[in-house]
Length: 372
Ligand SMILES: CC(=O)SCCNC(=O)CCNC(=O)[C@H](O)C(C)(C)COP(=O)(O)OP(=O)(O)OC[C@H]1O[C@@H](n2cnc3c(N)ncnc32)[C@H](O)[C@@H]1OP(=O)(O)O
Ligand SMILES: O=C([O-])CC(=O)C(=O)O
Image (tube, rainbow, N blue to C red; front, top):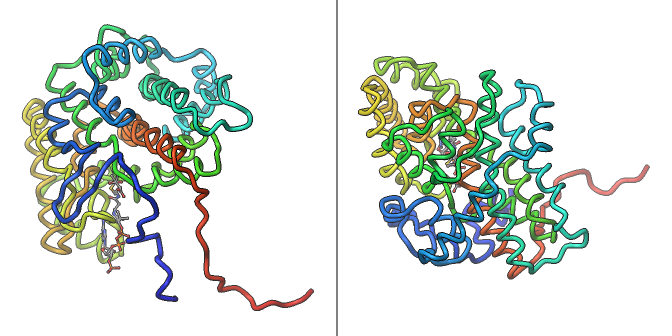
């Protein structure tokens, strides 16, 4: 292969962004200049979503306005519910989410048939709509799989408390709500990752915001990206107990398996978000009295680091954290999507503000010219 080819675009800088900075040298992540750890410690997910779209944290008045807009749109529309009801429970929840977002987009009459690329305000409005409605879709999908009825949203609750209320029919203790909110903040944005880049490619053709988000959901589903948080839990279930982690890993590596929740395209020395999510997981482990899970987590991490020197990524602590919160394993990647829709839509808006069609070249390796 020619040296000019950068398989998987590894190491290629394709555009500028002012939304987030991933720095593997300092192992840091900034959203609009703020370290993500500081945002997780001091802000709510609603404030972080506002920051990603607008570039600044909201004033109290701006936050109030945003919350009113968001809380008023939290219900699941009948048309979307009917489409979900038609889908078999064998469908992966990411397929359900992808379909539901597509329905919301097709029903939004404000989407111009000929793209009007620079309508920032309309796109922020659409982003807030998806931000508000995705929790209802995800919560309802988990409930219908458990043969439970839909739970209506509550406007008096924060984003995270309401998400958990719609999923479980009650607001759990604050320690759970806080851990969930931290996970939403950490998952919100990560520069040109595969799903965000997908959204930017779709946007670059002057397609609409919903089409870009639908495509991004599809990209996030794969186990090399967002699907890894679900896969981590399957791995934990397969291994069972801490003493089995090392032999399990030996066998998995001998059969050339990728170990889910480990490794990263950009961070080669650990993921900047892991310590914060691991602290949230530890709080849940103490709260639910599950030292066995902590032992398994540590044993697999230790085995992987000693054997391959490959460190965990964010999906490694978030998988077991969502498990302890009570989510079904299949729902983990939609939770990632519920958060990342903020980053995706911020990038869609940024792409439109300085658009160039994304269309790379390829080196042809097929047949020389021939004739029929
Ligand atoms: C929030 C997120 O989306 S983070 C990513 C979530 N995805 C996962 O957890 C899936 C598991 N991880 C992986 O598959 C990879 O680490 C990726 C896809 C995330 C990154 O991959 P790349 O940057 O392409 O790394 P690359 O594949 O070049 O890996 C370099 C070497 O480390 C190995 N490696 C990397 N990650 C892993 C892993 N998780 N398990 C086993 N080996 C691994 C590769 O096999 C390769 O070895 P080789 O040189 O002997 O062939
Ligand atoms: O940046 C990446 O390639 C994957 C990732 O961690 C994310 O999207 O959060």
